[in-house]
Length: 258
Image (tube, rainbow, N blue to C red; front, side, top):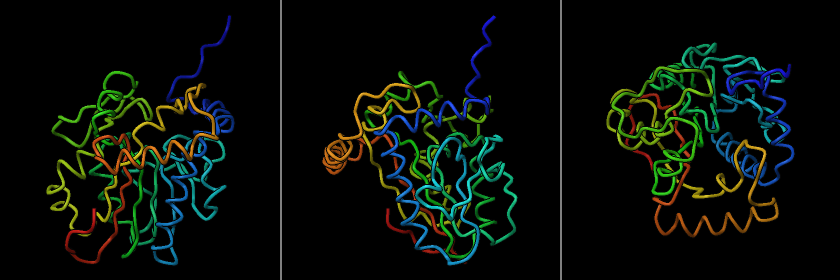
């Protein structure tokens, strides 16, 4: 009898996902773009302290930014640390950089994560994430064509998780940092939002994500990026994803650039 395929939350899937990332050049280019953003933001962080990626999974961040410590909620092979984002194992003011790619919306209590980040980050330390954005195209894709839950109308920042990957609300980044920005600033006055930059209307969808297929080869990535830049310049409502950057202040600061 043939064994059942591992479920989405099973750590045994990691090698399958890594093989997909190795094979799909267009998707790898998308990941490399995000990792390059990590490197840029890391230069603005304090010189010493922990630099950690949350939800590293099957990614390859160390190929681009070797000094980053990888981590995941699941005990994936090759990942440096097992870390629950709501209960991080780092000392107060010991972390200079926290980064993540498509992870924030999987954290079942992002308020608890932000409190932990506020505790762990050194003054001047930063958070960078790329996550899902509530836009015109993305709302249709996330609601009707994507397997993860997506609810921009929910009142709460937390959800009952079915698993670290299956549990999600794809609208969380938009909810916290746009719809509920006043609440975020009231709860976390020392975490200053410096950037909320929507991007990537269609590249991730064309890549097929972590599915085996891709609609575009790696050679089309630069052209697709240029077309996307024109689209988002016209109106950020076309965007499906967003780059978010936060900085830890010693005391409440004025609003940053977004």
